[in-house]
Image (cartoon, rainbow, N blue to C red; front, side, top):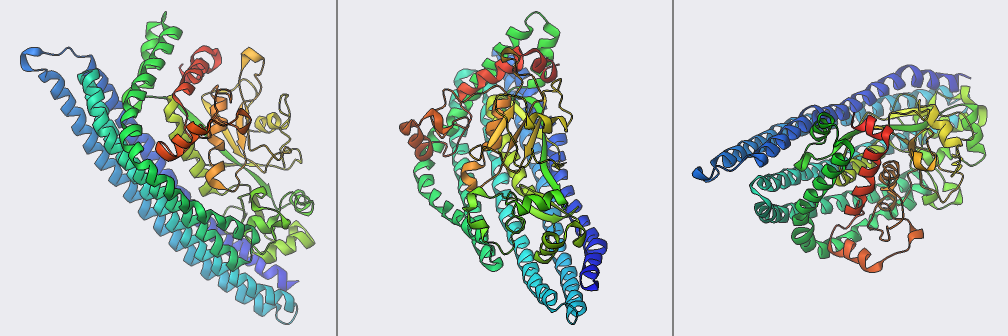
Length: 576
């Protein structure tokens, strides 16, 4: 008995609390970065946009060659550049130092504590349970592999952070180009094209960074899969072939610089005109609300109505319910934990990209504790929790959705990722009950969604798959015109290959905002589904000459803003 209870006590009372502190510290770094963006970056950008709008509306004083507009423009340019430099330094220095220190210190401390725990376990079990003593040695191997993976994941994340920094630079360049619009359409077009060209080059650099990051992740999956004897992870190592994206990048660089970048200014002007017309139609008889809505939406680079994402991960505690799911083959604990696994003899794309961690931490559960849990029950191992998606992966999906949805004039922010504890079989896998109220509505009700929801807040739930295995995401939307007004929100499952399925969350949020599949016939469109067919010419142009990734199209803007301004409940929540 001591052979099992001693390491369990150490894990619950020492390793768990220390690892939990490291987890909270890492979360604090991410939260600090988001707060800087929300409390400093966005208000500054809103102020600059309002100043540019004021400059644009000024009458030109011809006697001094429009000196009033020039002075106004110079002020906004200086503020834009200075504020960008200051906020960028504060945000990224703070975040990167915090992130590197917390990850490295947590990895070192956790590894030391784990090794001490394994040594004690080996000594306690050596004469009473030799098999358990030998398993402690295998746990040591996994502990070292986990520490190596933590460091490698940090490197991959830092590559992604470099991409985000370059993206911020692209936003600055694009903002400077748009600032010339205060001098009229001709100046807007000319300088927008010039700065758009530069931004196109920057965006090409960001893409190179992104496929470098994806390829590096494939290498990590392959190496860690081999070291841990995890067939699922080895299969996911096929992600290393993301390096082949360099071929399309080489073709697309010219198109990004000469077409995509310069075109953004024109697209933004069209977006601004459409939104303003929708506001006129909705509030033309209420000048105060019209002015308030225009101020809320802003203009220029800050154009977009603010909304909020509420992210949740399904969570299953180490209970008899979880044990049943594992024994029935619905949730494979070994594959999810990245331990020795044959992937249930299945293709890795059918498995979940999740984790099995001690509750309140990001420390992966040992194979030995999973063995005890499966063989003896929940009380035989320290408390742990199973999630269908990694926190870092969920964060990337959210950031991608936020970036993409700016194209339709919606600026999403999001809170820290919370958990939705599940203990009902109808939710794992989720019985989607498409076309009628069912399991998804029941699950959303657990989040407080009743049908009389604040539509400016969008629950986004990462789940353990659907009964319909061909389903990747599902939106419970608010559509009074077709009598669909129940609890609203979206769910999605994450799966391999990431380069394909990373857009599912953004796709479902698009549905929430009023978009449908119809009219989307190109995989380069986020709202496309295979059932709509494929326009091969458009697809090849997108992937080899222009964007190189799925986007929300200019045609998507109109239905989104129809939903925002013509559905009364949405209008009152989003534009009060």
